[in-house]
Image 1 (cartoon, helix red, strand yellow):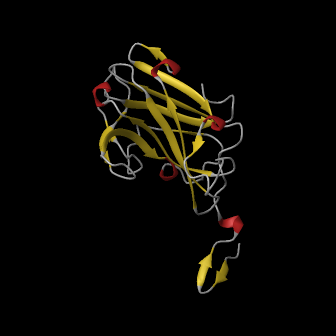
Image 2 (image 1 turned 180 degrees about the horizontal axis):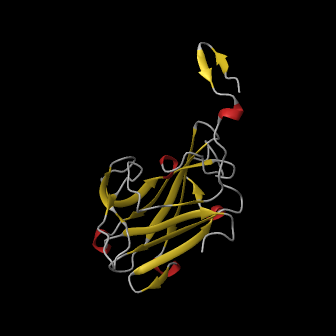
Length: 188
């Protein structure tokens, strides 16, 4: 199909853009540049994982905070943009040495373009489903709060950017083993 030319810039026609997908799952076995955390060892008794790395946060705080972040640039893991729907749910699964509160979040961009903000939710250890040191939680998109409501008050009809877990307690030693996003009944 033909491309549009605007001010000397070639802009692909809508037919040239990749089709959107509505489901996505983190594939920790593929590695690659999409990971913003350190991959952990894989053995027969340990699944692939992303370990939370320390991050000194200095923005809008008087005293810098030491956070621990495990995340992935979801947009870099697929050729097609992942569209967030009103009924989308996100499943996070990971491990911690002891229960601790976490902050779950993701970034979005408008379809084919501009940054549209961050959406986050704080989760107490009691809200997580535990099996030993393994935890899991599935949340609806409506449970995440807009951190930049002037950009977008909802993630619905946006594209998924980065997706992450933040931990304040470094002694808990957080790692991620799975993240999935999909229609309401899709993530486990």
